[in-house]
Length: 426
Image (tube, rainbow, N blue to C red):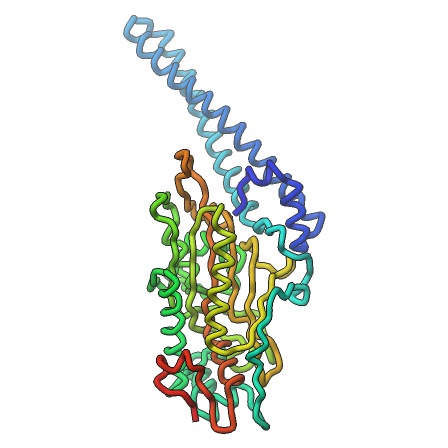
């Protein structure tokens, strides 16, 4: 959530950012509404503080008047205090209403984009910053897409997943299940080696947590909601892990904060259809290892590049062709200031599949979370939050099966063999 101060001090910058995100000119008036409501809030608060001061002063005078036997004057003061208290009550109700309206409007405004974010309307306008094509495979004749490979080698049963739950809930079995578990352990070990502390978080979160990281109100339709308990199934480990630091003031010695966690993730993926959802391309439940950092503002962009390098290293060890995209204004997420997406090439499908997003949210999440720290002058400042997928499993499995298929079976990358305990699926 943006700070009112950010909007007030540089409204032209905020407007330019919203236009880069493809907001319409006529919708920019929300910023003026926010400033107007903030002015109302300040005036109400000033008037109320003045009236509270008058009540305190009059209350003391009443005591003195009663002590001196000036009962009539004391009663007049009591009437004055009663009138002031009635005015204060009305003002407090008005302030509550204004604060609610102000918060709702602030929650509707996305983050300011970093200057390096390119202009553009769709994913076709994203900027390719790097690609690694040495791993492009030469597939055998009659190469199969991953859903046929999964069936051929009895790795994933999509039909049983439909029977047990529904479409988008694949059932892994045999070597498919072992490959999934091997990848999870491999990703976690890579994160541990990079200095991340492992967390096993809850898989359901409350409304405050979902709002704190920006899933509410922006992505409410994509989340599974447990009605009776008023809880949400997590769409990513980012939500519970980042919320560890909700309403926390950090000390200097707490930095750097580097956390990782494996969780199943749940997304409704409403509106998805066609070839994009076939097999593991887009599912409702998938496994993912997430990396999260909370840093001081001056360090956050160097840390973002470090996190990008971390994901690159994993994909290189998996011997998968990948490319890195800097997302354009029309494709970047609501909460992000700058996002790099990683895509791996699905050889049999001849398409790129997104497997990771690495983002810097600057103070957008921390303002919602009230995640702060004391600077060298003892002043309370908002921290910067960052996260990345390292990695999302479903599409990694799809790409591994397709890119590493041979005439004799599916070859396991050398870095993964110590985890699978086998080097070939045949």
